[in-house]
Amino acid sequence: AEKWQLQISYGKCGFINLCNTSSTINCCYNINANILQQQTSVCDLGVNIDERSNFSSHIDIIRRKAHTRANLILRCFLPKNCDSLLKAFKVYVRPLLEYCSVIWSPVLVKDINALEIVQRQFTKRMPGMSNLTYPQRILKLNIESLEIRRLRFDSTFTYKLMFGIYKLKVSDYFTARNNNILLRGHEHCISVPRYSKSVQRRNFIIDRICNVWNNLPVESTSFASVHAFNDSFTSTYLIGYCRINF
Image (tube, rainbow, N blue to C red; front, top):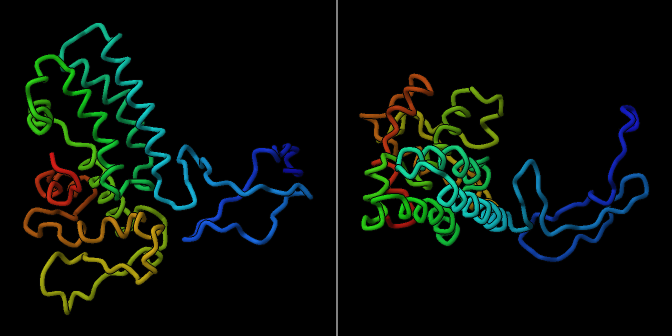
């Protein structure tokens, strides 16, 4: 900061304690003699992180923003046909609910429901949809549930990590299984390193995606490229891993 002649806003600086206990850290952090205050939550690149790393606060924030924007579309959007309303939802609402979902995708049913209800209520208020159930509505509109989309994002991230598209150290996340002793499943199955069963670990993507990835159908999944992988990754398979009933 001194080299580039930038001023630091010390009042906006702090630290957060990521651990299983709620006790404070018995030490002080400072920048140029300015003592930093311990925070219960921080916002980093648009993602709100709290001490428990369960992202419930982040989910509550984006849910409220998405509800407000979805209601504005229904009230102010002049074309009242399903195609126009659905396009507006995909452009203005869904990005709020999916930004960086690989980081914060929920594992608690209450959080999954809180996100899904945004699309559930929006589709129910669309013309001719009020008498249909949510599964019937998403089938008729040819869309996927938000939970299935997040599972797809997690799987695509795992593919890119596994095949070197992301320049990250794969061994920091998982290890490939020994194909010589693999009795069933595809040839790219993974094993998750043994970590403590903490709340923080439970919300980590590798803990979420391991079973989904290892049980990809051998006969229909293509690992030739990321596009082939996405095309062969069917929603029918992902429904079996949803935490909520549609």
